[in-house]
Length: 293
Length: 238
Image (cartoon, rainbow over all chains, first blue to last red; front, top):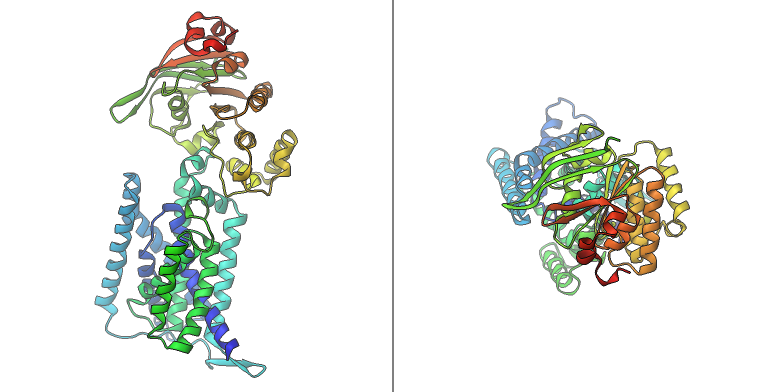
């Protein structure tokens, strides 16, 4: 039983990691909590669902996932253009970014509620059997798939951030936007890259969450809460810290739910967050976001 | 000889405050130009205006053509600033700092050649290339900041207070290297409060007071100028 719970926790944690990383990468550059990320996840979950249902025969999962990831990128760039660009131009204080992201988050959720809130929507099942077994242990097919996809995406992202030119530019802008300019780094290219990455992560998270659970307007925001916990515990803006904290949260949540039930579990989780904030506000990674992605 | 950089009636405003009030300068290719003056005189603002970091008025001709006002474009065109206080990227390794400096260089082979060049000049940076740049000493950070500037293959390198906060022996090393950079054909613009040292190595100097050029001339003219001696060289002069 323990091993199944562990896999299940890892799978859940891997999705939290996708969410938290999408959240953390925006934080590392702009130093604000992008609450709108949750709204984008919901919107992408719906878009993926409607894309899939527009075909007689549902297309392969990978097609839906890629399509929604692409839409996520476009949506993130659109939100940046409409909502954040002017604030940036005016060099307004960080509070305005935060207010704007809350506004966008609520707006998206309300739009989704009005038009699609009445029914629960579910993605077409990917696997004919919901579980498979290896050596007498039963595993959830969808959890395993989600874990594999999430870990692959996180690895690719870590590679981009640490080994490519644009990744280095993102890290330098996170440390000091003005010094990065002196290197000839075009900050608008970096900003677009960061929103594109966050949008892609929202897209894929939306499809994975929609497949695992069902699709409803507050899906993203409710998951966003967990992503938020994770990025605080991980150390705001730290990608490595967010991933470690996400996996830990997923595992802890699954075990707590098994022992205490799903009702009391959030109390304990938020208790842990409170403890972290009082005792170790810089999080697991041990440094504040200002000097590291 | 036509200057590589001609600055005409340069003005910079911070709100209503005029920080630079109509400065003219001619920078000759392959020389060291020192800009000296007291704190708050507008020296840093002048090179920030050249770098496109602040909005400017007036005209700057680079090789006879108007200079862009976009910071990233100016770096790409070969005018690179090494900022005051070094501003190395702490949290990134020494090598990553150098690679960031080579952001505008596209060819991977060329980047590797430039890296080797810096490590050959400063073996200490090579020994520490995988180390967090924030752990280097002040002098090493200054060398790193200069090398990071050189990684972008500058035609003009602008150094802002490179001797700030460094021990005297390290200051001497920094100034030796500035001369070496000039001898390699790179035009140097040096902003310094250490007037005596910078006048000693420069080919031409400008003295800035409250946003205006009040004196200019060759380094030795300035060293022997009684006004400069009284205002900037103080009792250090001998």
